[in-house]
Amino acid sequence: MYLPFFCCVDFKKWVIVVKKLLRCLFAATVCRQRYHKSIMEQYEIVGLKASDNGRSCERHHVCGDSVQEGDILRMKECVVNYNDKLKESIKFVTVVNGRECCTVGFLPQYLVVRAVREGCKDRFVEVLKLYSHSPNIIERRKDHVNKGMALCMLIDNVEGVQALE
Image (cartoon, rainbow, N blue to C red; front, side):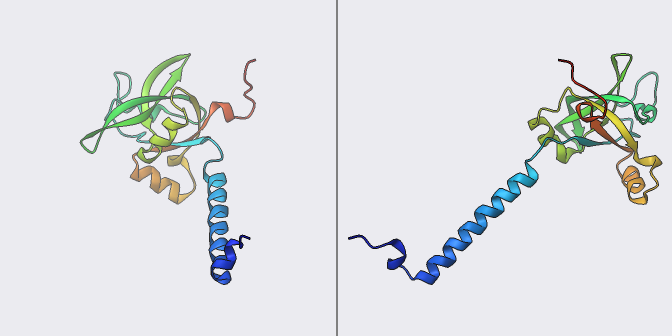
């Protein structure tokens, strides 16, 4: 006759080990649900007031100055010079009358990998808020430190927009 596993080992130690395993499994499940639940819906654009990395043209000295709340932008994958290194990035390009015009800013570097993994390149966003006009002092400070910032949302998630079937 076979004896159960817990008869061979000190029962109290076995219970403690099982409780720790269950706690770890529960924590991992909660973590997965919290952080991998959905695709990012809102993005911050940085560098609206900078003119390097293609953010100037013959019409604008700084293309990001022309961005207003409610503007439509397109996310495009690109390579930029970041601290004297070439890095993969996502740029935001203005869309006027159905045509792409100017590069106005970039996705913060720490979000690029996640956005590429979630397939957010070549998607459209709407500018919700410019941080330079915000009454919140923290947002205005972020705007100053990052050379201009704005908050935008994927067009799929904007109220009133319905997908064509």
